[in-house]
Structures are given as structure tokens and as C-alpha cells.
Image (cartoon, rainbow, N blue to C red):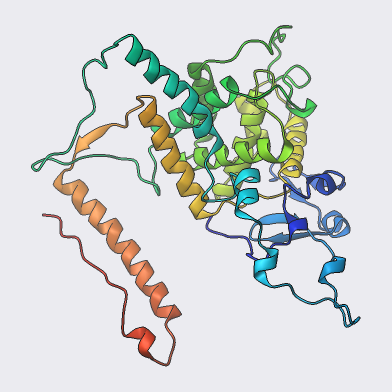
Length: 374
């Protein structure tokens, strides 16, 4: 989760810019009933893939600009020449760049602004305020943190983000592997007009909630699922729409559970949850999902945190309030213990990074203030 890709990335190794070459690679991936869609070593080597920081990337040869004019062989570019322009990085890879705005939050702002404008024009009263605010004597907090999100609230926020993706999509670009008519999840006949009706938020929530409850997945897995979903839409240049949303969400959950959880749910286990789907179909969908992601399954901690806080912003804009409770003495002691663990961890890291010889640089140390909860 905390792995980061190398900073010296050449433009040819970008999943966005190198998609055309990556799509042509015939990488043989086996996703057995219990496998995680791994790549065969011989096929990966033949296709010229390298794994860095948990993500498979295409290896590129030195271009003509990288070679020594004197014929002395390739030379290493300066890091400033290899980095992408900020505008390109922000626009092309929002699920990779920590400073890029998430797609779901941008799509939701249109509805939020229209709702606020309509309420202002029609003089609609906001009604009774149900949100609790802290005072000098009482502090209200919820039980959701970036390291331990609340499962129910997180799933509600993630499914609301998927709802806005479908509602405010740009077009209906899709792939056959995700089409529910070509690859149905149930034996029930898919209606001919299945692509015309957008699912509501409750429908999406029930579908995702069923998978998470049956597979006993965590809230962190839901956030990683949303990261993979937006990464797929960006890399493959497709849209999530009524005809493909179930299979795209299922593929993202399948991949996120294997990357995040130490004891991942096997493909055959999902076949027990969705009775009518075959393990061969699950394997094929997982393989295509990985190939469309260019095997970039890395989620930096900064990107994860960005998605978490943007989901909280989405919840606040749509009145999906987290359950607030007064801060009790027991909860305060628990939070203090967690803070001490994090502080001790960073102390050990700073000591390990400290140089043996002291100089003027060490005269100014890191300031640490202990919070006292009484």
C-alpha cells in the first residue's frame, strides 16, 4: 500500500502514454481458482515487463536522445528532463497523482451546485439541523479515520461516487468483457433496454454491500476499489454505464481484495456468492482488468489518503453524515494510545535516518509536542 514507484520514470513507461504499446502485448496471465491473476514469468520476460513498486510497467529501450552523440553508449538523463509536466500528470492519471482532483468529486459538483441553486431560488428551508457540533465541554467525533475507516459509511460513499460516475458520464464507451449482455452475472434474461436505465444509489449500494458482507472485506478495500475503478476508466478510456457497471465494480473489488488483504478471497469463492457466474469468466475478467491497468496496481499512501478525504467531502455535500458520538474517556485513551504508536514509529524512522556525524544541520531538531487528554 505504501509502495511508491520510482521517481525516474521515462515518458515511454507511462501507463497513459504507453497504452497503445501495452495493449498489443500478448501477456499470458493465469488467474486460477485461487490465484490472483499473476503473470507467467516466461511471458512477462518475453513481453519486456518489469515489476517496480508492486506495479508492472513496460520496459523501454533508450531512445536516440538518450544516447551519447560521441558513440560512447547511452547516458542517464537528468531527473528534471524525465519528469512529466504537472499539467499532463494531473490530467492523465488522477488515480496516480496525489495532487490531482478525483474524478468522482468533480462529477458530483455539478449536481451539488444545481441542488444548492434550486434551494436558493425556491427558498427551500434546510430543515432541522441534525449535524452535531463540538463545544467547550463536549467534543463530537466519529469512529472513522484514514487508517481505520467505518465500513458502512465508506461503502455508502464509494457507491455514491460510482452513482455519480454513471449519472454524469461523458458517453457510453465500453468493452465487451464488461458488457453484462455478453457476460451475464445471473441466469435471468437481461432486458433489451438494459443499457438505457441508470441504477440508483440504493441499487449500487446493495450490490456492493452484498459482496463485502459475504467476502468479509474491509473498508480500506472499498477505497482501493474506487482507485482501481477510476484508474481503469482513465487508462482504458471507457465509461462506466448501465451496461457494464456491475462487472467493472466486481473486477475492481476482486483485484482490490487480492492486493490489500493478506488472505484474499479466491475467485471460486466469488462464484459461491454470485451463483451463476463461472470461475473461467472471473479469471478472464481479472486478466483483462490487469492488462487494461498496464499491471499498475500500486496505490501510494498519499493517493489513498486523498480518496479517503474526498469521499468525506462527498458525504458532506450529499448529507451523508457519519455517526458522531461524544468523546468519552475510554475513547480518548484509545486515541492517545494510537497516537503514541505512530509517534514511536516515526521516532524510530528518524533515528535510523540520522547521520553518524553531527553538524549544524542537526542543531534544529524535529519538534514534538505531546497531546494531553484529560
